Amino acid sequence: MAYQKLIIVGNLGRDPEMRYMPDGTPVTTLSVATNRKWNNPDGSKGEETTWFRVTAWRKTAEIAAQYLTKGQQVMIEGRLTPDRATGGPKIWTRQDGTPGANYDVTADRLVLLGGRGEAAGAPGAAEAPEEYEAEGGIPF
Image 1 (tube, one colour):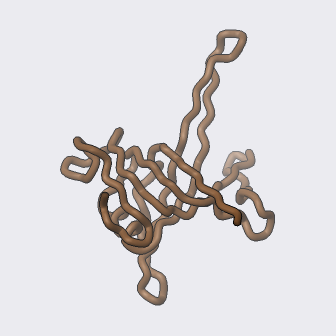
Image 2: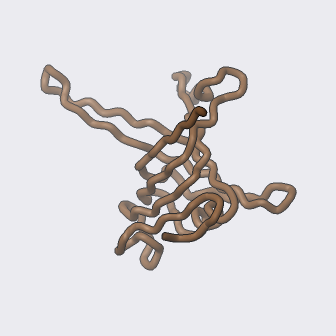
Image 3: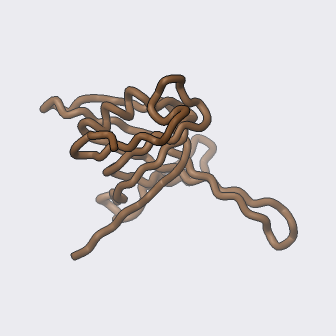
């Protein structure tokens, strides 16, 4: 049996975008940025930002669209969804001509952590994080 699990903790790069499939199933797309900082041997600072395109379905999609806003910190548990053509991340070219990559993730679990851009009264804004499972949609 094969299994993969990816955990991302980052900030939303824009407000969630929710839509409905033809059968009425809600789906929400999130853009999540993770940052890594380090000190180089020469004393200079290094920094790297990785962007993930996260897709949430059903109740998790509704929760994400209702409570998340640009800049808010979130934890996503899910699985990588590779580009069908290449089996890897989706490669694209930015407006300035430099290459970029999208790492697509299907969310299985969503935890609202608060952080920058948190909305007053939103779950997780000033209290313990709220968790939502993809299939059940029941907060724990």
